[in-house]
Image 1 (cartoon, rainbow, N blue to C red):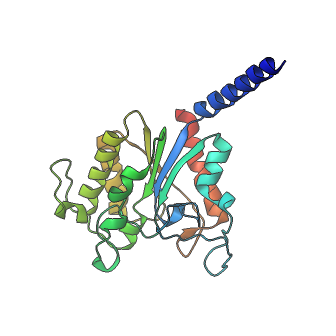
Image 2: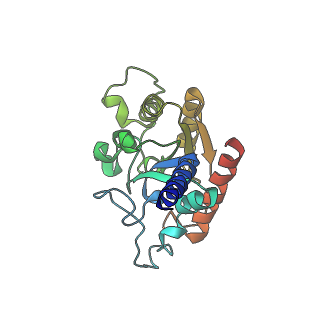
Image 3: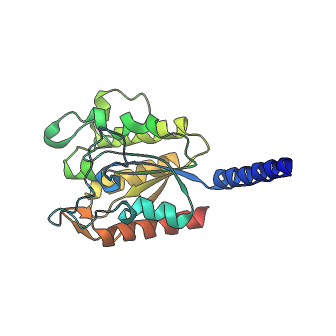
Length: 228
């Protein structure tokens, strides 16, 4: 009887393990829009906290974030959320400061082993007035990476090389500079990376509200459902 019980328990465990393995794992490489207190790597700056500050945002629960809703409603698993408030794609930050330590390029290797990679950036490049520079797809120098176009090209090139057989999507925020949006679309097309252009996102202080978070989740979910 004990033997049968052990075999039954082993089968249940195996079934649950296989079920978990069949769920696609999502990693997020993002900026403040994808942060939440205690859900990003220690040392990364966040925008969204558990303590409510209505002057800042109405979001104070991780379940209100766009990525939590996407993962829960889509039946996915979270692999890594490597988001950092204020991060830029390029090495240039606000007031022309060197943002290379927090840049998307620098943090790319920290995403674990995802099946789907969602890159949600460019907002701070747009806000900080980062220069686009020239289109460049090879032989990148460090100096090139202080400009948006070569920095994004290196990011996507490295993402494809580092994460083979991973579906990569680039999420483009609403209300960004036209040259940033057009550059992003062009570079994504060059690398065959699908981009998702967000529309009509409700914001406060430039950041998604609860309503805006749901809109992001819905718009990203719509694209993923068609592809998966």
